[in-house]
Image (cartoon, rainbow, N blue to C red; front, side):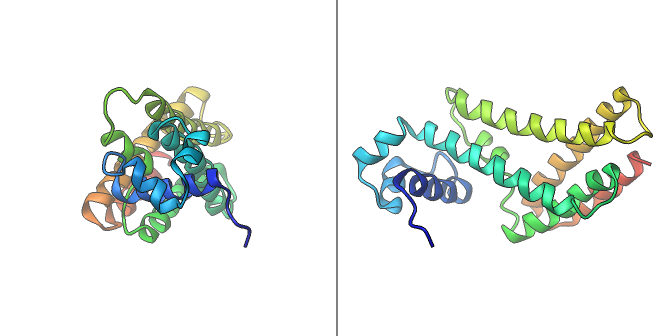
Length: 186
């Protein structure tokens, strides 16, 4: 296995800490220590903890969207792919012991002045929203306006299922949200 560079070690360490401990509960000194880098080296790559968090969210977005697309690729229709999002949620959230959404978690744990992090969370959620819209627009069954409205309803079901399954430590909210999705897309 290839040895990670300083920047990659910092992001990998911070990713684990931010996701599992929370942004506020993770200190810069802990990131430096656990990534086994010198403070000066860390500051060569990142000016602040917020910049590390932005890098974490960018990498997480790429990974998450790739895993989502791979999971739903077995579906033959765009509607099937949208409904398949809930299967992805069940698989992913079970694997992380219902820890929840990295963007939801960091945004609820964030001081007011961290605008770059908020922007990354908004970008991610908007990208998921657009991805769902695009899939439903490809269905001949819906007009563009209908596809966008239904897509927004699906996004709310996804987000609600994530947070409620995190609270409940169970996948029943995902199953219920998937049933609701099937009904609204009928």
